[in-house]
Length: 270
Image (cartoon, one colour):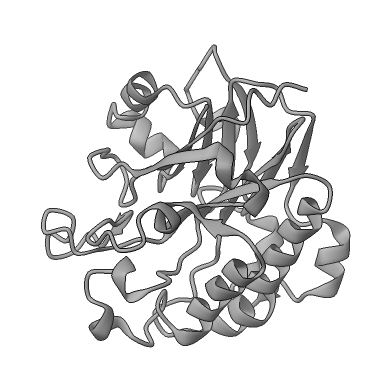
């Protein structure tokens, strides 16, 4: 099965460019996780007959949001953080309540969970870094570990952090800037230390110049001055079933490109 993740930065925009359906037709994902959909379902004129669709749109229209398109119906659909996580962590700040922004969507299948996440950006001036460091990153990791107690987990999405220097084109020039602060990088290290595997870096520990996001300025994508901030993370128990992680740098339509893995654990049919 082919599992894809893509921050589309506005699904309506990608579709209007005529790039979304050709991507589906060429890559034929079995499970497609989207971030930053920026739309309610009724605003999107897309009909994919082979897929079940699950959406978690932000309360604020045209902002954030996640969705999962799957060829197999899940056992359960889980929106946002569960109540015990919400009550434990401060997930809102001066910018708003992140738990109303459609940032987390999780499907339960027979053999595992699949979760997609659009992690809050810490902002150019790092004003959202405290919430991100102290609450959000901790809360999402705790949620994934909570699910993992029931069955293995694959989670993906725009985590808004480059973990190692190899994961961005200009590490020295970006030390301490949003997406490459010590705090955000430590948050990702905590994920690794908790037992989840960064699938791409596991298979390609020293492969450079592989990025999933590029700034819209200074022809960054053409020059491949990018960042790897989109991931497929997997439970250790699933690692033998995961192969062929890819970053599809040739897929256009967003400032991000899709990332994918193949999973051979079998169909997650309920």
